[in-house]
Length: 368
Image (cartoon, rainbow, N blue to C red; front, side, top):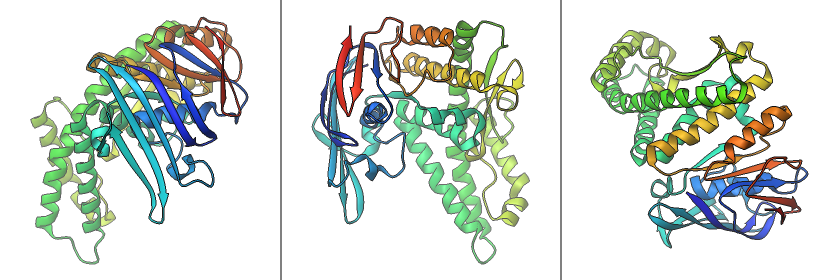
């Protein structure tokens, strides 16, 4: 998958931009606050339909203007797909319009047409932060890969909200309705658990190899494991569903007392370990950063292997706090990918497909 053309209008500090990136490694170099991260955000937004930087997406629209637009062409195995996303600010708030090959589509039909894997400095919280950040990473990857997963996730979330509303009611919850919600949660939740478990297992295998190629065996082996609140002895749909039902029965009194849903994949986690020890508790900041980068490269590899189509790799401020040896090893690794975009404040000393200097939202090609 190659992004061959990108057009921006009124996106952040870009009044307009026409950009034709190269296959391979594209590096954006320049001081902070010049537009490097804004450009990466735009590429990700074109692919996923959402910003990786803010939940208030009206901030993406250039200050004082009513709308912004992004469009681009991606070369995929089936040909060329043209995507566009328009953000309109009105009295009712922000409204986004998505098109694929000139036809307006709903978000669910837009997602996955151009898959992206993104790293930003905030992703260091994947190791040290709350479980919700780790669940979000897996959900985002699987939703891009599979419309069915996205639909199941939305269904599951709806039933969790409805069950919680029932539990928080002013009178004792209706047992028959509670049982209905649980039945639906088991059905959707079982599918989520199995999909996540398989995906994280694939991430673990690839991340181990990537991490070892960068740092050898001197720090111990990296491991990434899916930790479910529901005990899983046999990873089959029937076995997971049965364990889910048993866990719900075990927690029924606690759920009613605490007035919230305590069982299901919305409470699961992903564990990072290095040399067998919890990475969040015992790893240095550099080790945590290297592990997250290995995870992101593994995510790229898993999505490519499972779909037959390489995603775009977007890496914002990826080199800071890595020593020169790790910087070179990392860039040499991603330089072989189908297409990757890296932002940095300084020039790099490894071969790249193209390097661009960015100042005041203006791109100047400086090499290759």
